[in-house]
Length: 329
Image 1 (cartoon, rainbow, N blue to C red):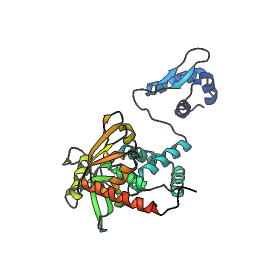
Image 2 (image 1 turned 45 degrees about the horizontal axis):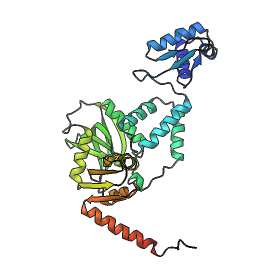
Image 3 (image 1 turned 180 degrees about the vertical axis):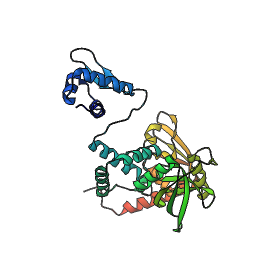
Image 4 (image 1 turned 135 degrees about the vertical axis):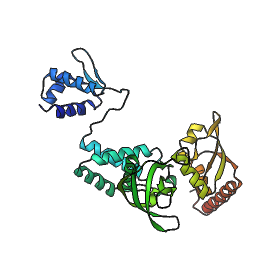
């Protein structure tokens, strides 16, 4: 292989597999001498790739963790797998799949060859995610919409899109996108609405046909400390705030792993108990069911309305099983 850039990319692709490569094997794979392999390794190090060399007859080369994340070289199968995974997670606002993941997806899809884009789209269309009460209200988001919004945020380009409000009214919007915010159940776009002259929060699952106009804008000053605070303030204005106080008869890490991150983390009381004090704008019924799904004993210290709801729910569930088949044969 005489094309140096192509050879370096091939070498980098080999080194990014988690193993140690003897110099002779690399030379055979690349069709060059061991001396050329050593020079190419030095070039990769100059570009910031931390290649470690082991001495001795059995020694070889291995790519190790460095101080910064260098560019990755992906083959077709790896690129498709990552794109499908990011699309699936981003489309349903899974906990942990935040704005950074959407930016990564936007970058990846921008450079995917058309043949790979077709494969990603086909896999996405052929699969169906499992939704249910543990996934919130199941509101889904078109991954293309997310990546379009993310690209406009990064490029500071004005956006045009259709938007459906809570009462079903459809409007056309021209906005300057500021940030995407994930609450764990939904995605929100924080943007300055140009035609209304004010900041707005848009639910991304209600956004349709977004496209970047190409018109650049200088970012305005957000009226809150950050985009997450702006979304929280907007939601609090629109919905009543629910103040929750619950004691769990289980360790804090056990409860944290079973609660949505949007409810926050409980504080340990001792080795086997913890307490959650939080505020949210979710419905009382949804929060009550999420507490029950933690699968441990708990006591609701407040609000009283939740105590009453859980009491009535318990009685309904008991009545639902009263006339079922006996457990005894």
